Image (cartoon, rainbow, N blue to C red):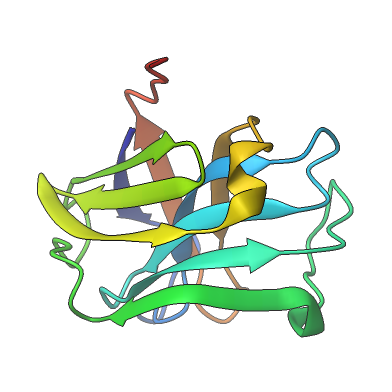
Length: 143
């Protein structure tokens, strides 16, 4: 679970229509395969699997992305600067349930997530739309 908000970047001159945040809830030991619930400044969110990731990285090969669940704008996100969003993922076996601001978005099943136990945070900001992601209260609760 994590508390996230977008903040205005120091050098920002345009709206951050492409900035994003993410909660990695399943990754292999090298983080070359990650499962992440991610959301953007406009209020869209999805569960995504990235493969063949090499860290540290600034570029992701978009050919290695699979959208496992896409909620679009129906994510219960508070949109805008300095709006807090509590994002939580509960993983039990091969099922992951995603919650945003206390509301259930949905559950999906994927056998690999039962083997991938590493977690983390992900953020994206592009030079044409700089925005800062600020994370707080990141916590892991074992079951």
